[in-house]
Length: 270
Image (cartoon, rainbow, N blue to C red; front, side):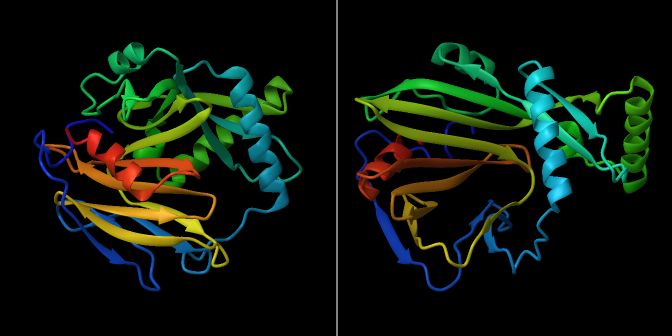
């Protein structure tokens, strides 16, 4: 999420687009080494096991503690006491909110991300939130280390006689998610950017009805999606001299056209 996009589009250059409609498989995005960095999978394909009701409850409780106890721009590992003391922990973080685009741009300086004052000259910046990833998500602890952290927090909860225990964790300096909103006469455009060094996998349901189309805009591969009530377009940018990518995602509810989203995407490439 930074920017100059992989290909710089010269002013006045005619937009060249080639399209290929998706078949039965979901479209993916790859980095400049040909590795898949964004994909969709169904619950079955991902072998996803839904959390138990107990786990869901503890996760919700940890989210509540995070909202109450964490300051903006911080993260912590939470342990929630329950009738099942299995040592399970939950890592939570709180983003930093912005309503001033200049302040956001200053915060994201040196992050290779392009922050726009407006989209198409008419949708004005409204607000944004940036969340830097906890270092434990970028470099996960070993099973033994994770178990030790859980046991430490379990004892802490017992000693303090609280329903929870928490341990602050450091934030990554270059892995983050930025969500911003642009508005025009009540209609909003959502722009999300995520900088990562691995693969992002999004879980979808087989029953979800949406249509994907692969676009190549001035050499940059993109995925356009029509999900019925709205549309989005996304692509990745390879961060120079790193193995990281930034995935851009622009989305709006209807009425919005593919051509409008393409023009907005192009603005991030200039």
